[in-house]
Length: 193
Image (cartoon, rainbow, N blue to C red; front, side):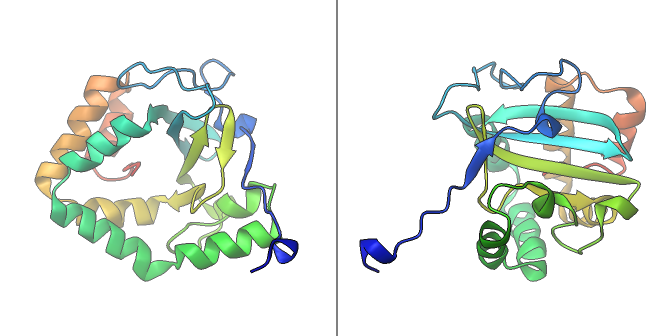
């Protein structure tokens, strides 16, 4: 493709308030696991937020290194099962191309329906949002996305016991989670993967 035919598509926007910390009303400033500062350009991190209707019931941000460390602690079987579940449901590259073409600066089309089953967020009681960020920007590349509670439960069932134990231990070590929310995590209603 020659340079004159190249169309640049900006694939980031300033972090929307939806992905700010509910607790502080500000962007997440530090990794919940290692404490690394997150708001400098070039610092890649994930934000995960679980909702019950409009109420935030769990939220956190963790840097790329901590996310990768947690992912590496999961069994190979778990990671294969989870990726197979997602990739059997959606073509991530096609979804990204379509959304960048149709809605390059709007977050809502990315999170209005469940990534894997298509259930509309407006029809759901519980769901999880996941965003990839760089400093103070939200990046559009396969993420952001939303998972409904039913798909979260399916993903939980695909995790090995060892991986689920690792996940639950990570939650207990890093987050101040109310007992009712921790029970939802143990029961597989909140997976946040």
